[in-house]
Amino acid sequence: MKPIKVGLLGLGTVGTGVVRIVEGHQDDLQSQVGSPIVIEKVLVQNKNKSRSIPIDADKMTEDPWEIIRHPEIDVIVEVMGGVEQTKEYILEALERGKHVVTANKDLMAMHGTEILEKAKRHQCDILYEASVAGGIPILRTLVEGFSSDRITKIMGIVNGTTNYILTKMSQEGASYADVLKEAQDLGYAESDPTSDVEGLDAARKMTILATLGFHANVALEDVSAQGISSVTKEDITYAKRLGYEVKLLGIAERQDDLISVSVQPTMVKQSHPIASVNGVFNAVYVHGEAVGETMFYGAGAGELPTATSIVADLVAVVKNIKLGVNGKQSGVAYKEKKLKTDEQISSKYFLLLQVADRAGVLARITQVFADFEVSLESVLQQPNPSIAQAEIIVITHDANKAAIQKVLASFESLDVVHKVKSVYRVEG
Ligand SMILES: NC(=O)C1=CN([C@@H]2O[C@H](COP(=O)(O)OP(=O)(O)OC[C@H]3O[C@@H](n4cnc5c(N)ncnc54)[C@H](OP(=O)(O)O)[C@@H]3O)[C@@H](O)[C@H]2O)C=CC1
Ligand SMILES: N[C@@H](CC=O)C(=O)O
Image (cartoon, rainbow, N blue to C red; front, side, top):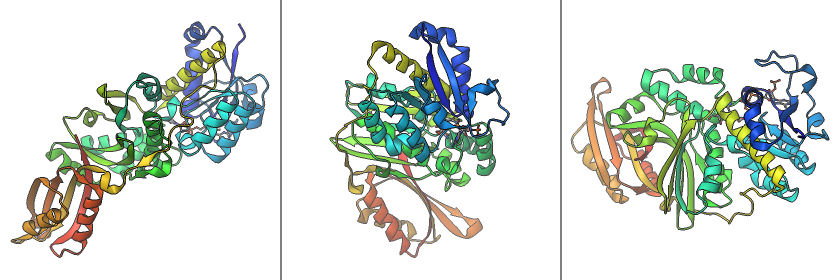
């Protein structure tokens, strides 16, 4: 049995997991694919760094081309991260007929079309299950499991780092900075964690999910992204009192042929299953016209969960090699997307306002909502003696995004509104 030879680009959190699983599950893998899977070469930045697993020194290299141009390597597993340089390596590997498995959502969200086309042209596989929601096999589920349905909504907690931070803030009152450090130490965060906390990592994942779920060429620029850096402990406390949890949600919706995709901190009703997804766990809720509601849950980041998806892709590539059917993956030549305008994007909203504490204020505020035809589900007013002002919490019925923006603009010139403290989308 000729072994399948793998070139591993990166031996950090995920790369280490890949080595552990390929070595630890070798018998099971072989029995599925009929050949040994061998990690032939490993690219690192620094060969002298101490590693948590033993790797033969002659397998390690700091020269990427030694792997990309290696005549015997069949499959490249890319878990080094980065975009431009990594893209160059992957394109050359595909040109040389090597199949590619990657966990790189930045690369696939930004250059997926070009990479997929190149792979198809060279009859190579490019699989990227690990790029979204770590250990949850959600891409395969969308492409294969839901191929018969028309998906109308994909809503997910797709970033483990921010869910870990929000959970610790909510359950333990922990500080944002301390928990971010913990998430970094646990290997969940990106090398630059700004992309986690500012919602960019989730936006990249939502680009991939919306593309595959809606069969449309959704681009990263089509996704509006807001992260969790503005979420306060006060917001979380208010949310809990009203029966909500604050979660960073990616939401992709399709109505007829119109699409919207966004990432934002969202108040999720505690009765919705996604509200109880805590810690590094991710969940992706998928609604299809025929199937109705479904939800997929699992670890969204970390060494072994992510490596599970990588090695599953590796198995798929080897099976395709055996069948001679590489280069047939979905994601190429999808239809042109049509994006919703702000007038067409509708949801409930939560607003926390700091206002003057005197007669008639509530009436003036509710009038602004009425002016823009935003109807209200509930309004709660309470004095805040420490600042001699009152706070008003408003939850709207479904309202369009443009109308809410007009309401917020009007509050800027309304003397009784001293500050709009928070605005959240509401789900559930
Ligand atoms: N961590 C996670 O939970 C998840 C990560 N991902 C994605 O997987 C990828 C890897 O993440 P992760 O394992 O956390 O990253 P790490 O930072 O832990 O590891 C990166 C590895 O790549 C090597 N490397 C980086 N840049 C270069 C370079 N220019 N030349 C040679 N080697 C290089 C590093 O070498 P050295 O060891 O010598 O420094 C290191 O071994 C990223 O794309 C990430 O977004 C996806 C899902 C989950
Ligand atoms: N930084 C990412 C890692 C997985 O994609 C996350 O926290 O989800």
